[in-house]
Length: 155
Length: 195
Image: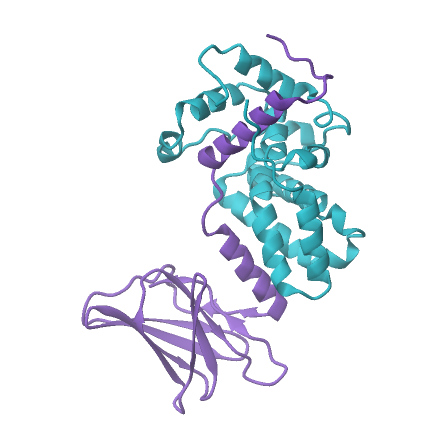
């Protein structure tokens, strides 16, 4: 049965395209995290954030076993953030030190954003923390300064 | 024969969201990203990019939109602009990936159309699997066009086809060569039927 290219589209054509669309969403689905990732990069672009460097040569920091701790340090042009990953009662605990007190640091996991303010020693903590990819967003230290975002690490 | 779900025109929804974004509504950008990202995903994948490169390419496209929002003359043009930008970015990534001298667009044929995740294939019912088997027998260019066109609603077919380089007046209002080819093989298959 030959279909002619120059004929107007009919209900069968529309149904075929609809079925193809359905098939493609199964065969080659959009990755579930893509829209969130796009939103995140757009929000970074909107706030003109500086991306911190991972100082330690660790890519994909793994959660340590009980009673041990692992640390990673990020640096930017204006600040340093040291992150210590530990366990407390079998759950993940994150302690971090930033260069100064009164600085807002957000722990970001997917769409979840958990802000905390550093104490006089520059310390911020989060507990309990879910395993998975996480980033830290540090608010500008000076007025007119740029926020700093870290690369994602795996907790 | 049941009609497929035909949504309100994607290009119109995109135009409204883009106009609202340009008027200062940041949330409208999220609406635009939600609505158009599936189309851009298939634009990038239809250019032969791996899933990882396609993700990067689609992200880059959205960043370019924010950079160049002021240069898009009419909101109605935003869907075509996004598709074209994704396609160009995909070619750029392909050129880097192939580490060869710049090559003609016609040399860039999709090469990554087969679902490689068994879970994806297993998730298909028989009708979808048969449709897929026929679809991948089409020419790479036709696969590319149909893949993108079908992601819109009926009012979007012509605009999406144009963004993929098909002359105006081919797919929508007429069937066009690629859809005619797919229709012919499907209707010749006694085991395939529209449900």
